[in-house]
Amino acid sequence: MGDRAEVLGELADEVLRVARAHPVRIGVDGCSAAGKTTLADELAQVVRERCGREVVRAGLDYFKRAPELRTKYPIDSAESYYFEVYDYEAIRERLLGPLGPGGDRRYTTGLRDSSAATALELPVCVAAPDAILIADGAFLQRPELLDCWDLCIYVHVSFETVLRRGIERDQAWMVSPEAAEHRYRTRYIPGEQMYVDQVHPADRAQLLVNNENPAAPTLTRR
Image: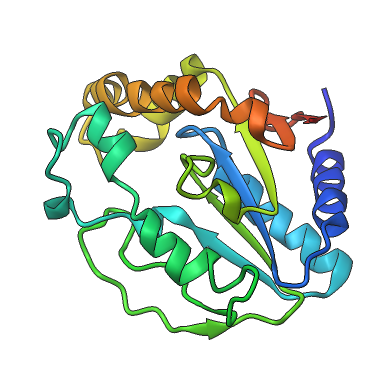
């Protein structure tokens, strides 16, 4: 096992090794409750302290499609979660494309709140030419987004851990632990299992963080 600060430092070193003629786009991928957002927040802080460059933080949960637009599958199904929740066109057009090759660096970090119920009016920002984007979310290595990342970090935990952490974290807004468990067993975990089976994200990512023990994660370089 590694020390968390040490692993974050190693991740920051890997991020700063990436050189592009446009802002560098880092994706922090993983299943629900894996610890993606916490890791991305901490990594962004370490990178800022080490290089002084602009670091843009974005969560792709703010690019979900409005529920009324998810019509192909039952709204609470695993298929709807995997295939319909995220607006990949908007992610490319409003965030990843502008920061990529030939982009104008004019980006926004979200379109709707994390529940997707309410539209947001976030400002359009202009990134510095040497900015670093650190974005976290589920399904980041789907074909719709795979070519948009300059470096991918996959945060791995078992589905047993996803279930346990998910119930602990989400039971308040899901009314009860039983409701949270039902949601994870019938929607989130089956949807994320499709992703794992079809995309093999842990194998595709250049960096793999085993986050079963957040205090002592381990880093594997592909």
